[in-house]
Amino acid sequence: MASVPARRAVARRRRPGVTGGRLSEGLYVPGRSPVHRLPPHVKLVCLLGFVLGVVATPRDQVWAFGLHAAALAGVVALARLRPALVLRRAVVEAPVVVFAVALPFVAAGERVALPLAPGWAVPVTVAGVLGAVNVLAKATLGVVAAVVLAATTRPTEIVAALSRLRVPATFVAILHFMIVYVEVVVADLRRMRIAREARGFRARHAGHVPVLARSAAALFVRAYERGERVHQAMIARGWTGVLPAATTAGPLAGDAPAAGPGAGAAAWARAAVLPLAAVAVAAASLAAGDATAWRPGA
Amino acid sequence: MSAPVVVPSAVVPPAGQPPEVAPPAVEVRGLAFAYPDGRQVLFGVDLVVAVGERVAVLGPNGAGKTTLVLHLNGILGRAAGSTSAGEVRILGAPVTRATVAEVRRRVGLVFQDPDDQLFMPTVRQDVAFGPANEGLRGAALEARVRRALDRAGVADLADRAPHHLSFGQRRRVAVATVLATDCRVLVLDEPTSNLDPVSRRELGEVLDDLAMTTLVVTHDLPFALAACERSVILDAGRVVADGPTRELLADSDLLARHRLELPDGFDAARARGPAAR
Image (cartoon, rainbow over all chains, first blue to last red; front, side):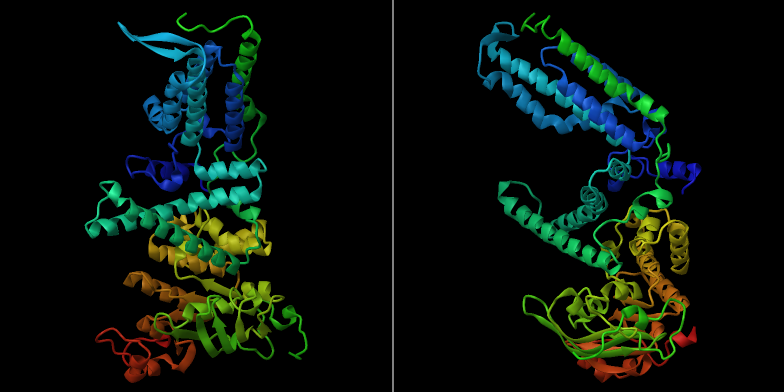
């Protein structure tokens, strides 16, 4: 097992921005924060708990989403992640945002005038606005929480955590292969692009789509054939259909999380603060749901 | 076939114990094979490799070298239910569905592209993959892994990610992953492709130090000369020549007939062979 100083050296060497980051390191931001040090499977369970709490919060209790966001902001600060980085990565929810922004205009129901500028008001539906706020708030909270997990946990640790949480071995193996081979496939893709450009091709307009489509098809075939060769190579080493546990966990795993594989009660207790808070807020907002009501323009 | 059924473990000698009357390490008789699309690649290959021998299988691209290799541990052939004729025996045991697991422990294949072979997050875990499939655990597994890493000269890379290593390092790690299975016969498919001269020499030294039954499939003739006393030439799915590597490489007509060529200015008579080291 790698000693702690050795791991630190590795972390320094792989700091994104210096080396450009490695694909197999995913979105991981090296660090020693309390969030980084939590066992990965504990973090995964907490993420799930938090998201369930957020989703269970009724949409008309806007204050509750504020509390969720505050708790999550606290975790971001505790993980010593730069807010700008977290927000930049949260851009993956852009399609959801587009959908949410469109919702007030296209939803059916009672319409009110929403003043956008002096003398210019747009008719929107109350249900649509509520829906948009609901979708936006829940998606953003979920995405940011996932971004925090990805930034504080290596992809290989997440895979090991899934296997620890008794996720079926086949799913874990598929994820594992994806993480390992995405780098190989992306390198293939890069070489194909460079080879295209070396022959004077640059995708500039829609007319070039067939070329890109053929490249994608070639890439698929190559990846598929590589899959077959990998399978042969595994069979040659006596593979029987399951990844032997000894190679994915235990003393051979040089990449073991700092807190060790056996998460103590203390780690669980520390980590449970976020999901418990989310569930508490959800419960409170459900209880308050009948007492207050959200009104547009109030 | 009317031959008596033999239990494979009685035929394959246990590790580290030389058999009384040594059956050949590899025995291929009349092996023919066609891919499911009908393309026939092997047309009756005969090849016998004695225990401890190092043999190069030379041949141009498309000669059927890789197809032959995949028969040696039952990935192709009758054990895999594909269309082959002829017989493959490893240390006396025929490669059949019943013996294939044992055969795969005996024959270690190093594939042409290390990226196909290495798939675990760290070198150590990858090297542990084979023995763990055998059921090894704990200290025994660690000892096996450490020994394989040492023999392939990659002990210092144990905790690195295979896909971040240089090509030469990856090749040697691939050799380590196969050595860890405690195989008796090492088979390398185009081991020098994409290697720089230093990595190529280092790989040759690793093979020298291993001193085990080795089959090197290649069209790199100088490497074959440096690594193997004996060579066979495979062309169009048949063995067309068999003899000491130096003699075969000195016969330029033979080489030319089978689309093989030495580098310009290379003198097979003067170059160092495996005995010279």
